[in-house]
Amino acid sequence: MIRKVKGTRDVLPPDSRLWVAVENTAHRVFDGFGYDEIRMPVMESTELYVRSVGEDTDIVAKEMYTFADRKGRSLTLRPEGTAGVARSYIENGLGQRPQPLRLSYFGPMFRYEKMQRGRYRQFAQIGIELLGAATPVADVEVLLVLHTFLAEFGFDDLVIVLNNLGDPEDRPIFIERFKSELAAEKADLCSDCQRRWDANPLRILDCKVPRCRELVANTTPVADVANPEARAHVEAVEKGLEDLGVAVRRAPRLVRGLDYYLRTVFEVVSPKLGEDTVICGGGRYDRLIKDLGGSQVPGIGFAIGEDRLVEVLPDAFRRKVLSRPVIAVVPIGPEAATAGLALSRRLALAGLTAPAEVTGRSLKAGLKWAGKIGARAVVILGESEIAAGTAIVRDLEKGEQETLRLDEVADYTRRLVANAEEA
Ligand code: HAM
Image 1: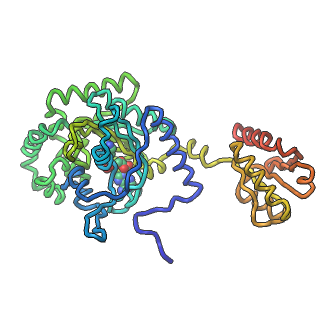
Image 2 (image 1 turned 45 degrees about the vertical axis):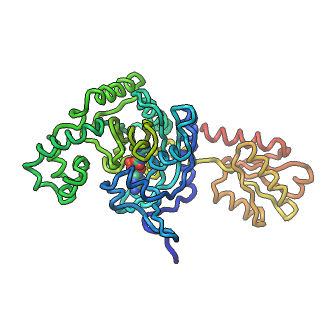
Image 3 (image 1 turned 45 degrees about the horizontal axis):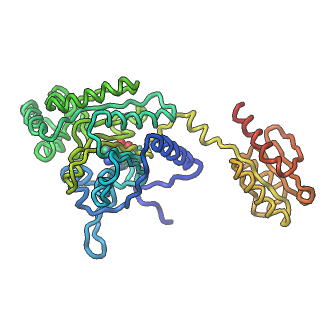
């Protein structure tokens, strides 16, 4: 037997319905705020990620699926979406369009990571990017979209945490201070952090090793070293969120695993998955497009890990999506088969889920099939019904049945289903 590649997943029905529901909700909410979908390639030049995500990040240093194509070009399966959006913005002259530009994206990302719950090598992201607005209210909008989207599922336990990374000019000052505060304990840091000390010291703040956490807990927060403008920016963001009733919590040690961020960074944490397996990450990246050869275009956005979001969906939402009522259409005999499909079409167009029996089962076997697929009702089409332009609708819950004209079946079964949902 050939098995799936380690770290990839099959999303099977009915769980796939949860994914569809999540994506439909995202489209509805994002569209409502004016975000239009961009569809990007899943592979890009490796250089794009080296120059945006950053050479010294875990993603670029250890996790990329990089390969040479047949002409020897170095390509990489996208580990994230923001770099691709920036590349596309520059390449397609999207700066010519009315600004700011609001984009959303959906799709698979690839990172060679150690497998664990909520961590896959192919995973899906749902993201938005707001390009061309440097104001704090732009950050507020992006967080409001995130909050509005998550609220649609009825979560009551998610927390948005936020930090201020300051501007790139503040970074060397912060790092010098951070290192001097930790210098005496340097030897106590884990071996990974020893490496990070020179390569990417900010990432020491993100280390999961308890001793490293203890050591950094007393260092000066990165926000305290930020320049006054950057500080005012993030404070204005917090004020705006408060005005809108979007609760966020300051996380003074929050840093992100990608190099392009400045000022506002944030994550969404679910107690169900723990702090190390966050549902969403995002932040501001005002230098990214310029660093990639474009003009000075500020940006901010987020990406939600869809696998993780689906995993922690509240039970009520899950139940609602998974308990989709089904009407089974069972034609009896070969003459009735196409009539069965015609009825199936009629009910489908009326918004019902009404699969037809197409394997030639007898009435008895057809009813058994309907029971197995969890049908709420069966519509039976025998020869005499077809001749009379009628169908028998059997309510499988009550065990009652009724003969109806074909044009009445949709309304009747819709009422059955609606009553069942209310009950
Ligand atoms: P990120 O934090 O690297 O940010 O990823 C965003 C989300 O993708 C994570 O919060 C997580 O839910 C999900 N994710 C990441 N890796 C995995 C994995 N191995 N398995 C399952 N889910 C995973 C970015 O990618 C940025 N581009 C976000 C952004 C958009 N910043 C600004 N705009």
